[in-house]
Image (cartoon, rainbow, N blue to C red; front, side):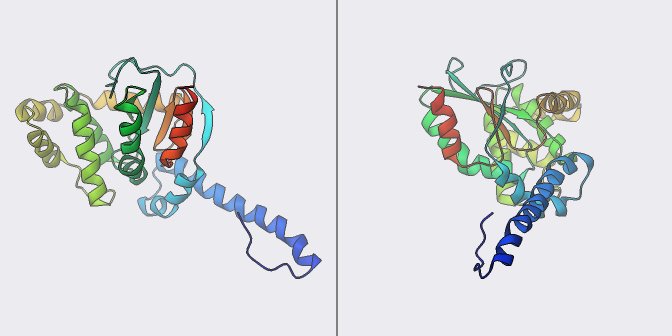
Length: 244
């Protein structure tokens, strides 16, 4: 944190450092409450007001060496690409929307298309019922090999909507997206209505927590954690390190 006040005396100088430490402590505490509190039902308004802290935390956190692409993961790009970008996200999360609209397009253009990296999206649905519903619908889209197009349509809709917990992520929207993508809407609706992937989404979230994920978006570049809606330059640095 920078201080813009004019230093006018030794007493003021002496107070500057302790006061900055106190303020920094309050800011850090706020971001921790946001990340952990959302899992415990903290109100949406509180989370929205403190969301900028989550995005600002950012940076390399740790490395998970045994993070592997497996199970129901759907790879975007060349499966043999040397770099893996794995994102844990929530379709309602505004910072996931920011990552999707601002950072991810550049990753896709510069690394996915060229075959230098591959990408995987995993569910960490924790913001409420709509988050789980959207994740289940996306899992149904996998059955028709339309996961990434469905994923993109969900985020595009949510970014345009700009609000959480307003009921827009519902069955009607999911079926409409399936129809727009020329999917078999009857089979899709049957899959969604049956709750076929309800347990899968719960398991995905539990698996995310098991590797230390407690906020969204959280991404891993070859196991190196990057937390928050970080700018493209952060991912570029991380990816290039594994291409040298």
